[in-house]
Image (cartoon, rainbow, N blue to C red; front, side, top):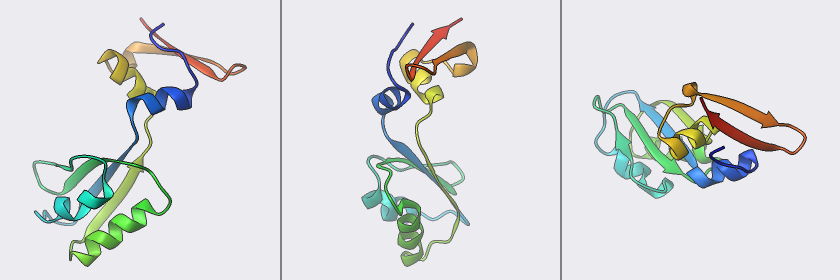
Length: 117
């Protein structure tokens, strides 16, 4: 056993949500425009179209992202807000992808244990 707790507790240990934005075309101003909405650095893909950043999830976050980028004259193709998963927890704790694990969920106690093979 590498960790014990409820799924929510374990997910909270690895951090908050991730914002992923895909632009219609690369734009150097996009990361600057998004910075006030993020909880850390905005990472831009090599092609300049995909941006990723940690965020505090909240009501209307995707709407705020689209409005902010629209006001900056930046066209958005896609916005996703990803909550941490138990796979993210396992990777954060072990440095290995969860495909090498068996997940055992004790439904009655609402606790999760992950065991490496």
